[in-house]
Image (cartoon, rainbow, N blue to C red):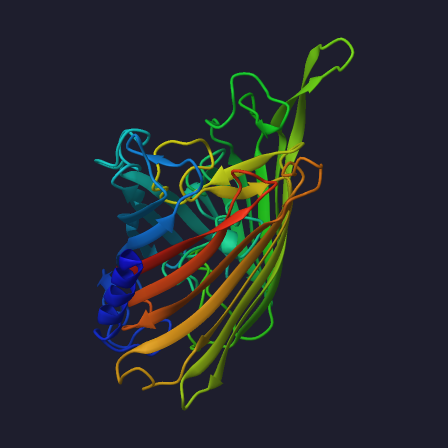
Amino acid sequence: MKKLLLIVAAGLVLCCTGGGALAQGSTEYGAGIKLPVNEDGTHYIRFITWHQVWMRYNENNSGSIRNRELQDNTFDFGLRRSRFLTYSQISPRFLVLLHFGINNQNAVSGGINPTLDGKKPQLFIHDAWTEYKIFENYLSIGAGLHYWNGISRMTNASTLNFMAIDAPIINWPTIDAIDQFARMLGVYAKGKIGKLDYRVAVNDPFVTNTAATEPTVAANYNPENNNKVYQGYFNYQFLEQESNLLPYMVGTYLGSKRVFNIGAGFLHNTDGAWRADINTITSDTTTVKSDIDLFGVDAFLDLPINKEAGTALTAYGVYYNYDFGRNNVRNIGIMNPATAGGSLRGNAYPTVGTGDIGYAQVGYLLPKNLVSEKVRLQPYGAFSYGSFEGLRDSGGDKVPVKVLDIGANILMEAHHSKVTINYRNRPDFTNPNNLKYRPEITLQTMIYL
């Protein structure tokens, strides 16, 4: 209880400090760190850097071990993201981008020896691509290590302007398996045809490090996979048009735009999964390869409600249908505070796999001057519901995965300087016949320039 009070107290102190916020951008921030290379500023180099720091109380899953000690709960600190991004246009026809940084470092994981300690995390390239405009806004083509993804809006999400504290991870279903932190090496095409915005890509899958040397009964990523990955996302933008200069899609505009989009996307990888098929009579084992097919349909709404008061509504909903092969389930725990205890240690739970997932979030930007003259408040809620073929109780019935997040953004300079307090209620699947729900309370501080 003392730990919980400490987190809340720290949050209240941080709530009462900071600058002003007017929109998704900021009047004080302006165009950001931008270096013009010609007189009218149409040729430029742009720099962006940001840190997301977490302070977290977590009630661990049953049997979780941290540094050889059984721990029922942990109170820890970590770097969720620390990044640097630069891009430039020496001509409206050309663009070059470089993005690098670290993710998920705490005291026990994320380091150069990720299973041993959290020291000296590996600085790695997230994005590096070149792009050429072929035909006005209708078609641009690029190549490199890129983030022009398929499946859904949130699969292309910017990490600078989430409404909830973070992405639910279900939106990046192949993360660090056949991709490099949601990026792949390949070519892409993007553009706008009227109000239809599109992006498609052909990529090489990375060698997977999640599959066993030999296939198991439940499907997993195929280490013999040499087939291309095809993906695309298409969204119709009914109201104001969103920029597609970069692939990173905004989580909330804080009422600075009137946006309503409906989208759909896919990812296909032939023979991307494999499994063992055992003959019950002869006990012979046959390796069966199958395609990875992932689909998503979503809708995004961001509307100012009262311009004078500055209120705004943001809502997003998505349905995913994932096929990774028979009974595939993958457990993920972000910045896991435990070091041992199985794949469901710490804060891990079944996150992606073969089956269906629904996710929704809604937030409301409260009126100006409600907290103070310079601070804005945006409460939100998010909920995900997963139904996986391979997740069943001893009676053979599917056990759904339900995760609830409730929180608030304290916006001191829009998204450029904010504090987020989030409460998560997540399932502990140590015993699917007797689910327990564990609390997780996170305080995030974020600044980006």
